[in-house]
Length: 227
Image (cartoon, rainbow, N blue to C red; front, side):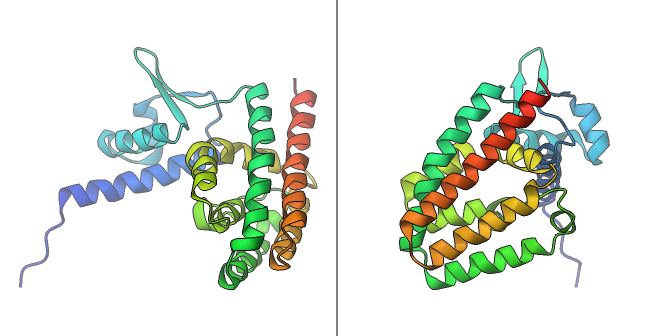
């Protein structure tokens, strides 16, 4: 029996997926800085790929507003002004506070248990243990994403995940990598889960708003120190 042949399109998609994930992680972690101009040739060499899969990955990143492509100028990693970033954090505070309130009412017992299991996994991360960073992969591995989904409110989820999530995620990680913030943020996550499990919507909302407000103050402090 002859060996199965590989569909070239399938191979291409797999390669594009790999490059997309590697590029997105590099952007979120700050290995490729916000506002930095990048060239296709350099990226292809850096990530060991050909131009086809790379361009497909860049198109996906562009749809997430993580890269910007300008005719006759090239590709630039997206960047928010300081003022725009702070505005987004005020918006997150209100919307994610509401998501936590709704999660306290609407999350199933299994979903709450899954949230606790997620934090138990986060707790084993070496960077978090050393209080140097708190990196959460996207989607179901991200505490905030799980709480938003747990609200079971499709309009709110679309706003937070569809519009804001990917733009904010890299700043969440990079500004968490300061002394004393990772462990503090993790403890705040645990308190939020306690409130959700107790079905206390008022407390869940207050703790989430306070958590994001604390992150915003941390950002404002470091922006001021480095201005």
